[in-house]
Length: 461
Image (cartoon, rainbow, N blue to C red; front, side, top):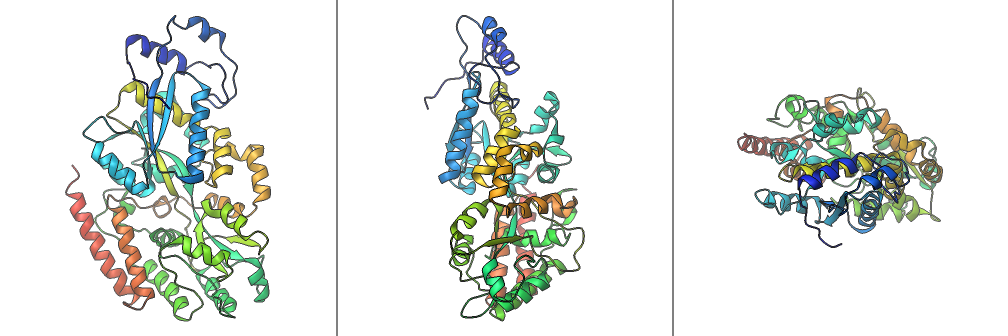
């Protein structure tokens, strides 16, 4: 895609305003979400020499098939109107992209729009490098009620929406229905509690195969806390005010890690390390009967098991006595950078609105496995057909919708989340391998995270 220089003149701004509020020719999908023919009014009002479109650079971290899906969204948006042209630029992993953005903050070399993983939310707010999307929501009278509340909640801080959710997922329990049946378990009644998972894992462990394997992933521990209605950080999970310490080593954490370690110790759960790719491979090979993975992996897992065994899905396990729990959304959202011109920022907002269309969200969901963030996407035939093909996804939808909104399920926010997640994974690893007792491992991680929070908070003005 050729680069186009943005000329923000009075003429360009006038044309931008006119064109953003009118339908344009050859639209596949308009920015308001409906197909529209060319507007004769817009055509007659167009200047003799068409103004150059506003260029919006979007940095993202979607590779492979996801990257192709992103390119399709951009191509559809660019074809739907003439005033804004988005250029998607892959910047590596979420960490790599965020580091590149940090390096570009004092220059104009950065993007107009950037995709940032959910655990980067506090940093993005504290960086003061963004224009909260709430500003555009208010100015446009954009109806947020059309979007999923339990997804929006994560990205709202101080009741203000700072970014627009884009790719959203939850973890769920995947299980091998054939192995359940062979073990005398009801394949239509999967385990939902810690106690039931432990019991099923033991029944499934035979002939050299393990009942399950859960990757040592900090995200899972955060979900186990939310499932118990327990906050991960103090000060309302870092939402009523900046978090100053983690609650990782409280009862919820110790109970979870003790349960997890107990299954590893009795060899009903296999410890395959930190990579979900490894647990997924073991599950698809029939070596383990249960695993935890993202909803975004559902299509790949079901397709990978086709012809070998039937895949079932269940909600994230939680203690039998847990109340007021649920799941925290994962994935990433889109931030508009404030060191770009007003025209670029408005152009980025128009693209964001296009992405929230029911039709766009339906296509994105079906082709990636991420949740639709727009409620009406579920009414699209494309989504209905996909759910008929992959009924296992209903578990994820119900889990999201049944989550009770509170500070625990809203999710923790802290500026050192990437580092904290690594420390949590080290603690889990130490406990599972017997290096430390669960409480001791969590105490050590909590101390380190709290120290990092103190250092970070000193840098925020």
